[in-house]
Length: 442
Image 1: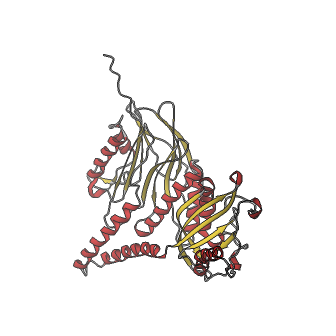
Image 2: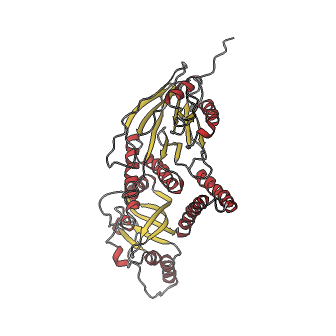
Image 3: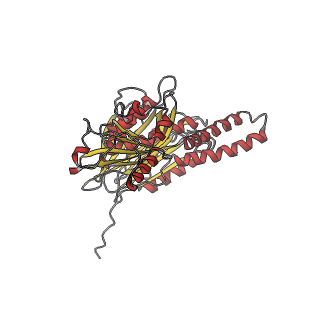
């Protein structure tokens, strides 16, 4: 790991008692020598990898276990490479933009999933934990990193996606083997349900004085959707929230959705400016998915800060649908966010920004396009008309003023009434500020 510029190689002279030189072997002459030798042997041959780096990331010490995993010689790494040089291209970018700054602030990182490059060009999935060793005055002297082989975990995830692809193929052959297809379909649904559950937050952490509510409508029990949302706390009295939609469905979309959710949360910790968060996500998607298989998404990202009366929401929008604002006076209208480009396609996109104040009695609705793209009965009686933006605004106006939970409940009933006309997943996220209770002057 690295988080400062310049080398810090004078730890021994600083009086910290630090010695991270290359391990050697001396014949022990005392019990203390024997214990020291045994400790070094345990370090070098531990079942996990150990790595020590200077604050600039340059490798100072590495054990035999990690060298064996990488197929590298000690002299090729120590004093020659940085920790980031051992990572894949995407991992190196993620390390430099997210992990290193987070380590500088927190002093430690636990259980971070990365991939190392081996000498033969292969990839080794690992879990990494790092701790900063500080000297006098809080000066960072050394970063000690423990690395665990996550091959079995990585293989399990690949196997989970592989099972889903096999089940999807089996459904295409259902006309020839109906009984087998039903068995496979049931197995697929269990996998999809499990995978979909991991892509949604178990809880939403809203600031005190604000109510939040969310709902996810699954259009097909056979495919994982790409819609996502979250509300989570940040430092200094701020909260982050987002809602969006990854292009496509199935296992590939699920992998992108997981990356998008993790990147948005990590980027918000590093720099909570909404535009900066979307720019970081754009960089990650451009590097991880390019060439013949680009992946992109639409997203609304916001920062919540308390105000004297209610809350202020700063929004950045990348190609997503306009949010709906329901006021305490019973009106409902869209917040214009036109001009924001989708995330993951262009190297330097423009994102639309706006600021919204939620006063007591106000509510904000974010949603994905499954809601407005639902097919309903048109004026001619045909069931092919699009529900549309105007109909949604008019319907929510009948609910205003309202709370987040009541708003989501009302829209959940609407989604149910669409029936088979709703053929795309739909995510809803509502935020509201409760109206203070009326005072009883009697």
